[in-house]
Length: 127
Image: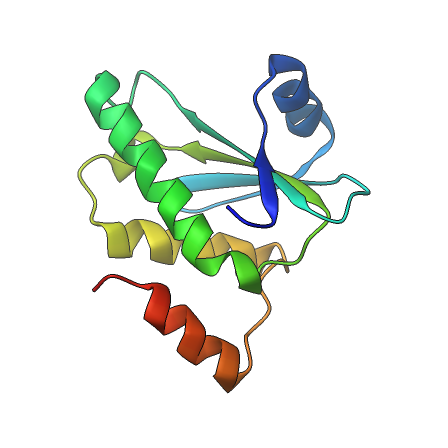
C-alpha cells in the first residue's frame, strides 16, 4: 500500500469505533474517522464468526488487495476500519471488491480517476 499505513493497536481501533461514521452493506462495515494526516490508515477486522483462521486470513487478503488496487482513487486523510461480516465467507474477490467500493462511495471517499490513471490502474490488475 503506497499511500497508507496499517492500524495495528487496539487503542487505534477503539478510537475509530467510538468516534467514526459507519456505513454497512451485506458483507462489510466501514468506519471512517478523519485523522488529520496526508495519508490513510486502514485496519481490517475479521471475527471468529466468519470462519477458522485460514478463512479469516483469506478474507483479510481479499480486502487488502481490493484496497491496494483502488488506493489511488481513495481520498487521503482518514482512519478506516473494515469489519467483515459472516455473510462474506466464500464470496469471490469481485464481490468483496464491489462491496468495499460501494462503502467507499457511500462514505464519499471514492473519487473517479481520469482516463490516463484508469489505464494505469488496469495494468496493475492481474486478470
